[in-house]
Figure 1: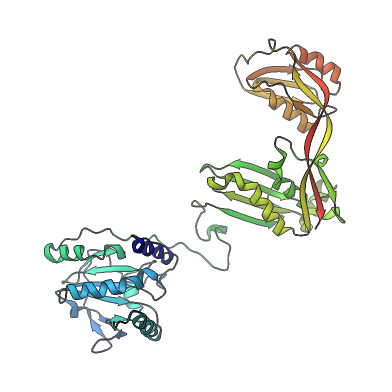
Figure 2: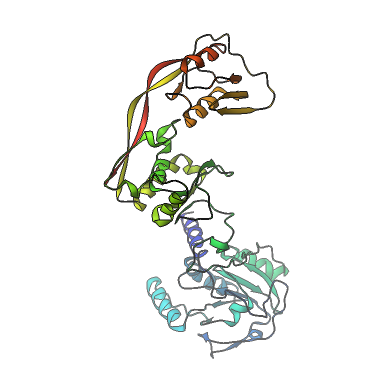
Length: 434
């Protein structure tokens, strides 16, 4: 069992390597095609340096495309030698590699010395002809050719068994799994993966982290969302360093939205982190090396670690700064339910959340949505801390604005609610020079 697991693991390694035949030249052959009587060159350990396909007529010929660096290929060498002896005169293996004669000979010297063997199989080196006739992207790659020079199967190493060979020799039938090589995807090593389709369209993306400078074609935006596959995405478009750091610590703030009141700078040059400029002047400041785009996508297994991963990356990308989390106590307005029998569930209907400086109109919505909007827009004199305990959907209307807490409370009492003065502990992001 251990040996089987090892071979499978090594096979996975070889899938990362591609054959030198990136673009096949005609003619190419597939299952069912009959191969002409070609001359095969660069042959080792035979009577001459060439062979003809007709030399194998009447036998089962299995062409073994391999390489010295391919662990499953190397593991198959003793098995192929044993099978060829078992079916002598009826079966021949022909190993084929694009590597040089010297490389293969040096490899076999070490191979035989290590195993106290003397294997010298007939094989083809420095090949391009057969590689083009049977295009493939992964190794090992086996082409089964019957005694009439017809391609009968193309398989991986695990189909090369005595039982499959015996069945074919007795019945001329093969029940093996066909090896399917996926078509090559255009990729240039000197260009970023997935940019402009380099290496594919990103449909199989599992983990992804990228940062660029300012991009004038994108809006200033931050997006934090779940992915359809259960993963998580953190996307920052044209944000400054301070906004990036605040985003990386957003999970530490719980339900508190980071703003300038929750950040304390202890740096020599704050202008490298943030700017008070507005409009075009702010855009120019971003373009001058102060704006960045960042995206992190993690799989479902790392969803809970997304912000921790971003923090680590910000530490590497901006090593001059040392952000940390503390807490502070601040005055606030605590929203309480003073009469539980007054506030009733929503009567249903269209979902609506409309909040501005003049009032609020909620229908079939949540009280927390009203509190969040009031805090984000800073409509009250102090931030609101929701301690009402109301979780159901509600209907609520406020008509006289929010600046006068006394007037606001008069309206809230009709819903069994009241704002009272209090304090709350909130997270504080401190950014210092490292």
